[in-house]
Length: 91
Image 1: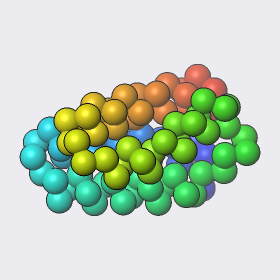
Image 2: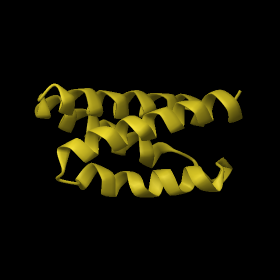
Image 3: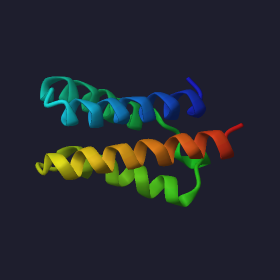
Image 4: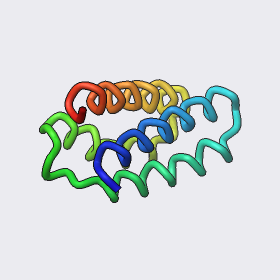
C-alpha cells in the first residue's frame, strides 16, 4: 500500500476511535485503536514531513492514555491533521 492510502485509513481509524469514545462504545474504540496502530506501523516515515513524524510518534502514547475525553478530542484532532496532510502534501 502507498503512504497516501495508509494515512487515509489511519485518519479514518482515528476518527472512529473518537466517535466510539463519544458514544460510550469503548469496545469499538479499542478495536479501531488497534487498527490505527497497525496502520502507523505500515507507514513509510522516510518520505514524510517532520511534523508528521511527531504525530505518528505521539500516536501510541495517545492511544494508551486513560483519560477518555482527552483521548476522544486528540484522536479527532490527529485525524484531521493527517487528512489535511494527505490532501495537501500527497496529491
